[in-house]
Length: 125
Image 1: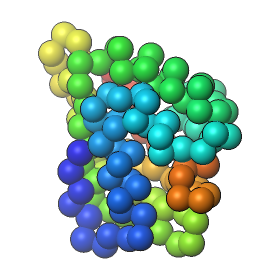
Image 2 (image 1 turned 90 degrees about the horizontal axis):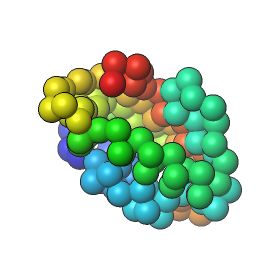
Image 3 (image 1 turned 60 degrees about the horizontal axis):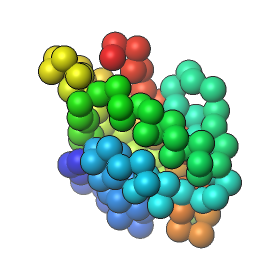
Image 4 (image 1 turned 90 degrees about the vertical axis):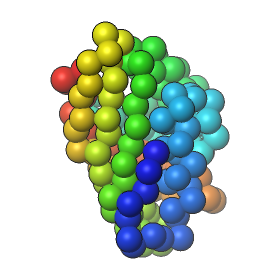
């Protein structure tokens, strides 16, 4: 995970922790950043509710790729909301590579992510 954003916010450390866990393909590390009742919407997949569902779905996704890394080019926040965007680079299990833009909208509560929306097209994987 690399942050290139020039406009860091009060939520930069939370975003860094989240995307470090994602890029390490560490489902447990991902759910450490979210509330117990988190709502996750990833692309056009069905919404998920709760830490267990988020952990399980991340673990299942991580098993389908060799690795990934995010480059975050922008971070913006206002109150209990943060937005970041950039690119995500995937290495498939067959060693081929795929890169796409992404954006995430994070609704925050008590220093954790309660509403997690990720806008990305992973259909190329």
